Image (cartoon, rainbow, N blue to C red; front, side):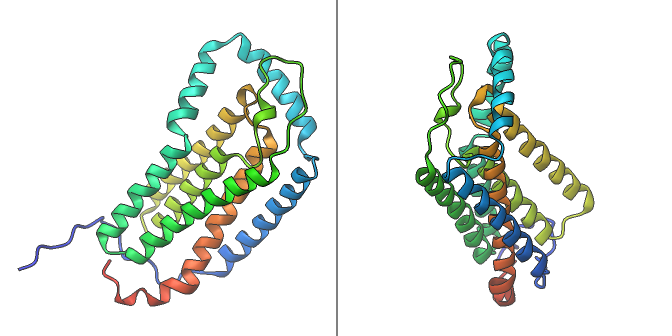
Length: 234
């Protein structure tokens, strides 16, 4: 007699999710991120003046507060590091595969990989130098659009939220997950801008691209994959 398969405690994914909202959201955000990318490639950032003032102020503060610098580096290098985010996706993919939802597992893994390739490709393609400032603490001239930390965090949180919604979790767990995702997005932005490691343009651009990737991936799965999931064991 075969042993019962493990349970997550979630119901089977909704096989008829609404496609249009995610599709339009992804297209609109993708268009906004494309416009921002063109502006960055043309060496004109719509946030450049704000970037300069914010970075200057943070540089002055960072010099006199090494404790915050240490906290920033711990959060950046461990909590919200892109590899930590990818590890979370890997855990979700393994759990889905173990659960029998192999099509969904492959789709999630492919979306995460696509986001990484997109971010690295755009970073290499744009790669413009920042203005050379006299402040010795400045490192913003080494950053490139879009922020890998911001994009990876948004893609990871977005995919995990999408999976939780797909499995129809209760409002308590959903609300907790949403709160964690919002805190993570804000935290990544704050840690990346602190010390001038990234400009606001990089963070905003990375977040927009992340939202577009997740929305388009969710719409694509609903359109092309969900109708054929009837033969899969959840």
